[in-house]
Image (cartoon, rainbow, N blue to C red; front, side, top):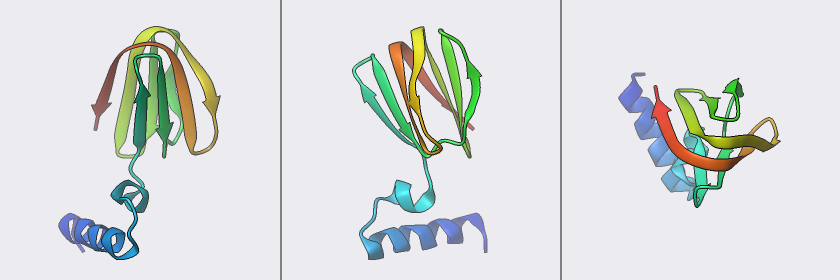
Length: 93
């Protein structure tokens, strides 16, 4: 099976079960509340942490959060909430 067949199977499964694609594919879900909080689910851990930069491993993606006074407000094995003044969010492969 190639990458395109895998994606097609995931898309059909999501449609059949009426589930969001991000849940079926295990993709990260980001929810930004203004510029003060970021809720992130489907992460795989922190790679870097300071009050100006937080890098999060999300499997195939790296989520880079930059700002001032950044704090890890909460974190579980699957979800995290970052607070502070968020100036930018970058997604990298």
